Length: 414
Image (tube, rainbow, N blue to C red; front, side):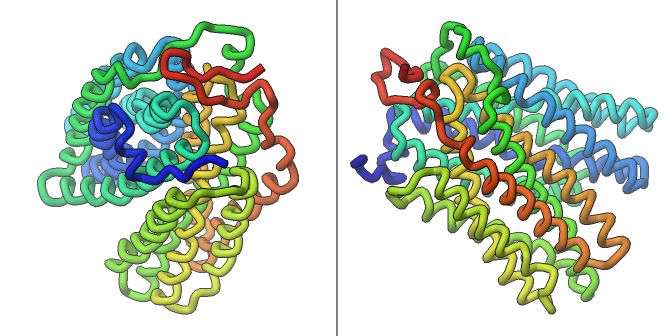
């Protein structure tokens, strides 16, 4: 039986801090791009529709571009892919700011935002790939690492919007995107400079060259995380609507913050436990708990009970994501792991956009309670897919990662 591998041992991994600190700086702007775009475009065009559409284009192109970035990183190394992404992203965000402030045609804002989203560096996926290399693929250690990364993701998505809103309202509407570009470029450059901890470039083979999405199990996880993303997006909109409906708009951030806090607490505890059950089993249980939690939100009679219910829903989020990222790593070959991580991240982003859009329409038609039907439906559909096709989540003998030494990176066992 594998020994427990706690956070202390994880953070003592040689070289870990050299990539964790710059990665956090580079990941913090992830949640700033969309909100910063909305606030800037809204200030310059005075149109919520235009602002939301421009931000949506950035989200969609990010979903499309992320797997390509991940696949290139698997084939050619992280730094050679990361550096051009940083240059294009920084330049396109600056261009978007200049165009918006100069009153340029709206179509040009869409173009700049699209390029900015497509070139957003996939630091989170690259960090997870570095953990796999640093930990030699040991399952008990990888589970703790992915739990740590899930908590980090939650922190960035809590801190990012707060930072963007503060910059845009206190300094200037363009400050949010300006700082987003600066943090992304500076953190990304520092991360790319840490080449000793980067996973090695593996020789191309017929198996390694197969795209991650060619694996049925990966496609199933993408569908499942679309459901999780819909929970994120729908809750953001629905909690805001519910708060405004009772004249307490300022409390929306508190309620959503409790949702995020539940996820952070659960993720921290989840990674500290030495699990004996498989990642597939853990995923099904955690996702089932998410379905149960989201099914109650529409019936909450006031903000207090809604906050409690949101906190309980959050408790299922991080365990679901940790299990999914742990599982997807076992479903693909060594040369497609970064790409696989980006597919999951992209699925969450796409689900977020779809969930917020659907919730907005239902809120307009039926009030805040209607919006809370979206996370319930999205989670239920994702869970139904997982339960029906769970057999696809068993790794084949050719994709099981085994622990090897640093000099001989982990390859598929044949």
